[in-house]
Length: 368
Image (tube, rainbow, N blue to C red; front, side, top):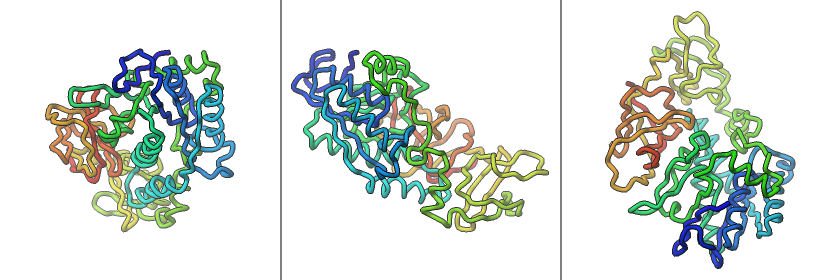
């Protein structure tokens, strides 16, 4: 059950006695195993959980993180491991920096990624600050990604298990944050992680993974958006690329670029897909799949981890998409072959092999 936490001045495999590791504990099996690995290293280990929901409303809620039963699970694991565990109330901060942004993005016709925003703000800014205040040598999390020491400093790489890789969601991690972060599960397949939990008798060993956005456990994100931004739920016209009205929709918040489901317009020579959302006029622009072909994506708020790298790249424009060969000019991504379903509000993450070079938020696209 060894894990290399790469503490400066300590060789891999040596005891970390006298060192301090803070572990971000969400109440799931992954972060629980990280806490167990940290405790087994000999370091003083402290578990931290950020409460992101109202205690009453979240009681009994499972399949998410940082709320209700999940907090109790994290505390039970910490007690079993004999480590300190603290819960910090970050409900207001989470609501302002993640949930409000989520609603704003949908209202603006973009498709947000709240997990990245959460990592940017609450987890890798606020939680990292707490860990530093506690005098920690590092902050360890249960993300499936690898941190590798490179010639110019720490590098971010894809997880060894491609089925579990979470590097797309961590592209906004800064070099300074990466210096302090550790990801001990990045070299492990998920079955091994569960086996470690089972061998230790942890109650979370068979706990299911969360599948949906944590603050939308029922998957009905439109309900959240319509509650916070009622205008985004207003009906409007479905039009073709020439502006001809084909039908009506019941709110742009139900659609994203590349979507086919829910358009429900028959009598067309080809299946229709969402090509563009126009919030100002509440129009949903649709067209054939060929209309989705994109030759380039314009990026904003770029985070670069690649140093002086100028070689070939692959670009991933959705969390479940395969990285595609591309060229990056510092602000735009140019695809070698047309890309499909590229939506403003999503991220374009750039790779050199398994290494994450960085990425940015897609602000617009150029047709192929």
